[in-house]
Length: 361
Image 1: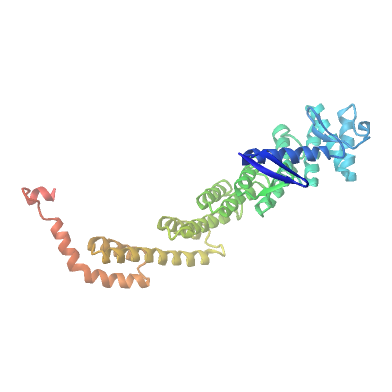
Image 2: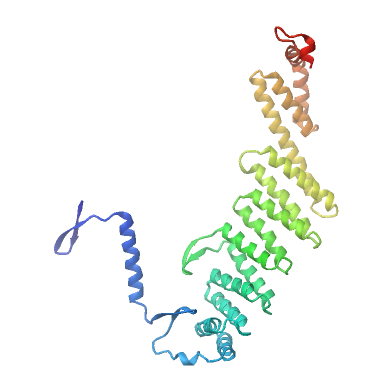
C-alpha cells in the first residue's frame, strides 16, 4: 500500500507506515533531536550514572582524592545553592567510597539535591537506599520525615513523572506503597503511625474501602498505646465500612460491619467527642438496613411468596423495631398470618407413602 506525500514543488509516493511503527519513528526522532540539541555533553560514568557537564567545566573543581574532601565539596555546594555541583560531588563520593564513614552523608546530600530539583520520586528512592544501606546513619529519623513529606504531596494529588520530567498521572496505589515503605523503615518512629493511617487515606481515595479498613485496623492494633491513634483508626475504619456500604447501591453486609465498628468505637472510647456522631450514624444505618429488608419483603409479597416475605418482614423488626418500616412490617405480618400458617402446615403434611412419624424425624 502506498500513500502520496505532497511537498512544495514535488509529489513523492512512499510506502504507508503502520501506526506502531510510526509511533516508534516519532519517539526516536524526538529523542535524537533532543540529544543533537543538547548544549553540553551527557557523560555516563560507572557508579555515577549520566552526568551533565558544562562545556569547558573543570572536573578538578569538584573532584577530590579523599572521601572526606569529596564530602566537603558536596556539602559546601549544597549550602551555596549550587545543586548541580553538589549532586555530582555526592554521587562520586558514594560510588567511589561506598563503605566509608562519609558515604551515608553523601547519600543524604544526593536526596536533598533531587528534592531541590523537584525529582521527588527519585529523592524518595535515594533516601530509601540510605535507610537500607546505612541504617545507623544519624540522618535516619530526618530521612523518614522527608520521605513522609514527599509522599504527602503525592497523596494530595501530585502527578508521578516519567524520567523525572514528563507528568503521567497521580496514583494512590503507588502512594500507598511509599507510605508502606516508611512504616517498614520505622514503624515506631515519629512518622510511622501517621504513615500507616495515610495508607488508609490513600486507599479511600481509590475507593478501595476494604483495603482502607485493613490499614486502619492495623494502625489501631499496632499503636493501641499511643494516645488518639487507636481511636482515630477505629473511627475511620467505621467510616470506610459505611462508604463501602454506599459504594454500589446498599450493601447490607458492609452496613453491618460499619454498625459493629461504630459500636466498638463507642464502647472503647466512651469519652471521645465523636461518640454522639457514631451513635447517630448507627441509628441511620439501622434504618437503612430496615428499609433494605422491607423492600425485599415487599418484592416477595408481590410475587406471592408469602413465606419468603414473612422472613424479611421479621428481619425489619430485628434490624430496627422502632423504625417506620417496623410498624408497617407488623401490620403486614398480621395480615399474612393465615396464609403463612396454612403454607407451613402444608409443608408438614407427609408425602404419599410416608407416615407422620417419618416426616417428624
